[in-house]
Image (cartoon, rainbow, N blue to C red; front, side, top):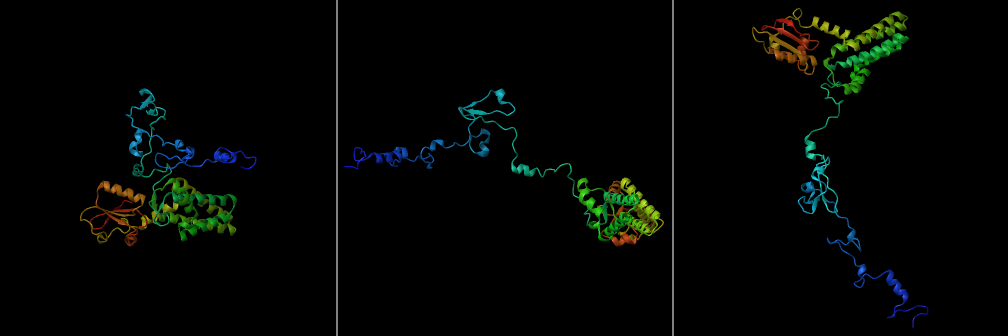
Length: 360
């Protein structure tokens, strides 16, 4: 006898146990629905999941050699999805497997990494320039010709403001800034930093010239501006305004046209005091390794990165004349001995060392 109120099945099982078996059938051979199905490759995937496993994507016939085997284009099961004329459309031809996706050949392919590396670095754009030949803070013998013009523009602005508004302090501060740059170097010169850090990277390096003439121009500007400020504070306001106006006018001329009064005075003094047919009209042939007898020889005092010096190099090489090149960086004592105060300095001498003419 079973418990009251519980119906029993044949064989002694009651309805509660039957319901339990219906909800959770045992996983054995008598319940094939609970058998864990296995993937053909041997992976256990659980009941009813093998048929839902995603198939690997089909591959284009052209990619067989690069990414493994793909469909054979000569397989009779592959049918052209379009006519030959349509297959030669803008996207190229393709094949369709019945019931499968369309394979389309791409027009452009990305080059392999080896080809991209062999092609070299790409240009960064129209604002890219070759690196400067001269380090502005180390190669102090030469300077970019646009740097002094930038400095002259700053001097003009400050000097003109002092004249227009009666600000002697502006002249004094500009004179102090020029003095600091002359004593401590270009890293402490505001106009130099303005050009070398902001302007030159965007415009590229200009022509390189001897840095001594612009240095004399800065010395003259410093002296005139200091005198203008002192005159104003001592009561001679008219004299101070005149001196400040002279500095402003000459600075504007140099900034706009490139004609630097102080630079030209330096070059004139160098030609008058240096070696020439009138002054130091003879050189010692032993200083230049001997000179050929009875032949006109060119003696060239030069600098390796000076723009004018390189132009003279090309010109003299084209003329194929006998010459002796003296690098003033390697032999500064020889340059000082003959009063070479600016480069290039080029002389024509005979076999005995007599100066015939000065070319530059």
